[in-house]
Length: 324
Image 1: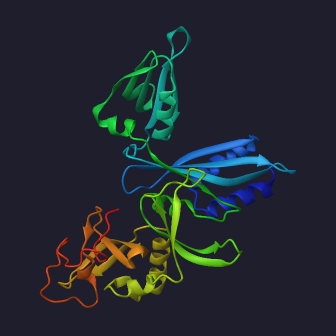
Image 2 (image 1 turned 135 degrees about the vertical axis):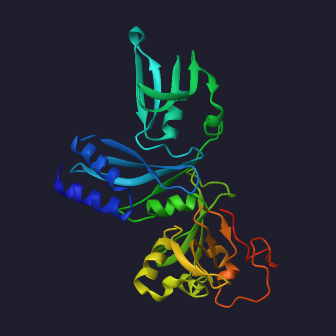
Image 3 (image 1 turned 45 degrees about the vertical axis):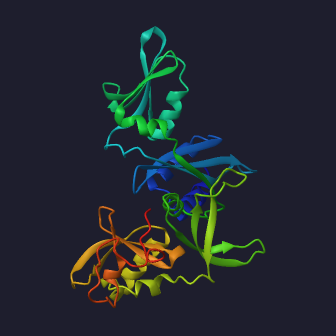
């Protein structure tokens, strides 16, 4: 493969924060000269499993590879234990068992549902070490384990993201937006060709666009949300360390929930996760296990005598934590 093609793809995929192992797998398939390449991997999820699939197409005068889109799918299935895969097991000629491994529960379920004979959907390390979670008889599903029923019968939340030359929503941003978060971009371009910046969220309660994808709501320069100023409203230890603060802000702009040390109303230092909520011009705080905390107890000026336990605020609108 031409080294320029390799360098270009590696640059674009890295800019979009595609996991390194997926980049290397894609490059290995490019070496084989395949015209269409699809590589699937996983991203961290707050709940369930988040699958990422990148699509690469060969074309043009010099057979360049173009990375123009990726798919994200969020399902309720729990992440697999290390070393285990999903597998679809069927019976081949002569009664010999055949099996196909999958990294993604979504791909495995889709493959299993298309079977016409006898088959098993299972989780395990190999054909000698697996546990069925669903079985099929003569093309009809006859059993799904109780623990797997919700996953099997609940369609995943999916969305396709289009990119151009390594520019667009990176996979971390789009993945966090799929879980209800917000992401910031300063390289957006209007229809008139003007650059602008905005926080972005998916609109789950609106009809999808003509391509079947989630619509985006933006909070731009005219919207009264400034991340650094909001952080300065709270007693966050990292505010005194510019380099660390920049890392935290970059993480929050990707829609992540970085860890910070913050002082509560009792002058106790606690370790929490923090999230930007531009829609309400505020921040949310969470315990490491994901449980929401009342933000008011961490503000620079805490009103004395107020019950600071979660759910006790008088303001039930903007200042309430958002369940995500």
